[in-house]
Image (cartoon, rainbow, N blue to C red; front, side, top):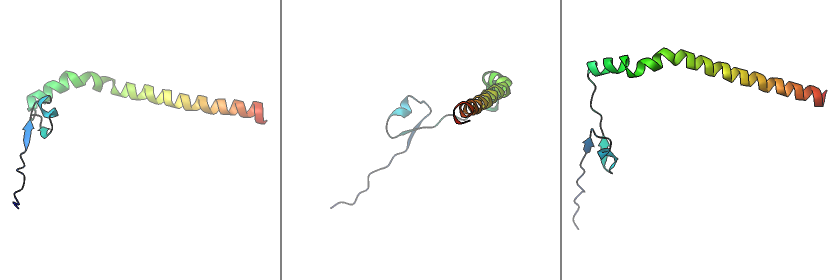
Length: 82
């Protein structure tokens, strides 16, 4: 009986399409400081400028929904249980 272990290879690829194959890890390339600066100035600037407004609107909607729910329960309690 031969006790040879299976040879384990570590394959990686910077291309996500290739890395979908079994046994291949996706390892993205490290971004340079220039690429990071460009990304912050172009892609993420829109979200950064509007992030607080989006959170504020979502919070107002959530608290408004909670208040409407409590008001509805109060009206039902007054009409049925009172």
